Amino acid sequence: ILQSVLATGTIAAGEYTFTIEILSSSDQMLASDSKTIVVETPSSIDLESPGGVLSDTTNNIIYTTFPLFQWYSQAGSGYNTYIRVAEFNPSIHNSIEDALEDQRVLPSNQSEDWELIDNVNSFQYPPSDAYPLEEGNIYCWQIMKTIPTTSGPEQMLSSVFSFMIKPFVMIMYSY
Image 1: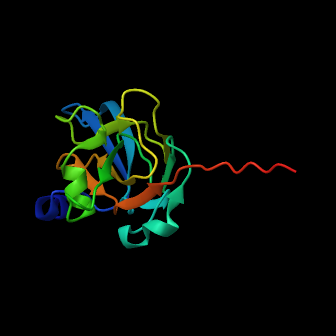
Image 2: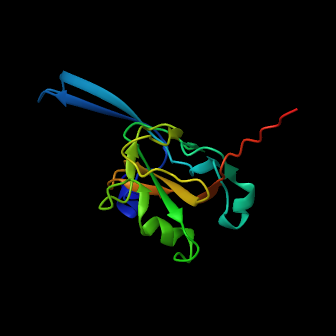
């Protein structure tokens, strides 16, 4: 274990049991304690909905300004999950990454890059504390997890998904 920690700064995935024994000068056990720690190697974050790649936005249409963002990722003790959402404007942004670095709609505080959310695999766009999403616009979103490691928190980023909010048109028929 020591060589792995010294070489990589982390411990390989596995279950580790650490035992401490306090012995007297005559080797009589005075006290002992043991602790088992499970170390997991995190998997990737897979975005599910809404959206997809920017070039396919016409197939990634939603009809609500309060989308439910869903993804799959491993959860664990000490993990933190963050989200960010931005409007993509093709006349001012060269890429979805440009949009996410520009002005975000979530978090609404532009001094923050990410919005801390519960350590879950879905998030309902909030009706307050965020800029409202507007029909006809293209948005992009991304998830980040911070994972505790022996060398400090490690960040894991998802890919970026984009989607368009289409106006809901109600057609009335009269007979």
